[in-house]
Image 1: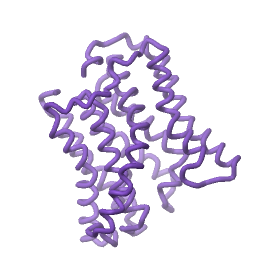
Image 2: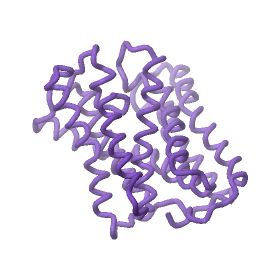
Image 3: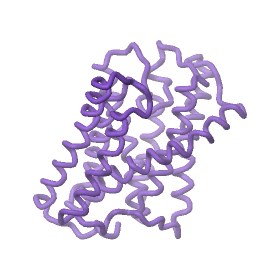
Length: 273
């Protein structure tokens, strides 16, 4: 990745990295406090806005006012030579989600379906809002955290794991908005973090190989539009007894397994670029 191939001393960026990590992990809890104080719990609340935009604001501040700079920001599309990687980014979660739904339906783990014009229309309608949100997210995680860790000389697997943990922890304050389960958080949260770490390998490897954040933005956008639509709009209903196995979201064990296969295939490729 141009801009991150030359390693800098780890200690020089540790302060900025720690600052960024603390800010992004805590901003959602600040948002929750604001929502509770205001007595609102609706999508688009001020607290959720704080939660969404704070990571990218922290990234802009660190890149603008510290030695981090902008050289490894990854804002260019870099389409040349990366058409297949862009296609993988767009199709990854629709393919994974479809496989999980087909297997789950055959095994009796879930009901409903996604083979309808109504579902396709609902996915299309959610793409633009998802894109707007994920520009903020991905230019924080893959636009700052990944390249900064790589520049500090950390191993790629450590980079992806750390990013996945911070990314997962950022979700904690608002998990209740997106996940309905009677499962204990003692088992749900570790599995959720595992799913985020494995997903971060896929996101991070494509980011590294394309030297662009945009494939990650597209992967996240199509993933949210496809997976969240089928779950939140109840196009599928997962049997509570098989929730941990058959959910097509990142914490589902079948999704984790399929994503892990893709992560291994990407990481094991001989050619970095």
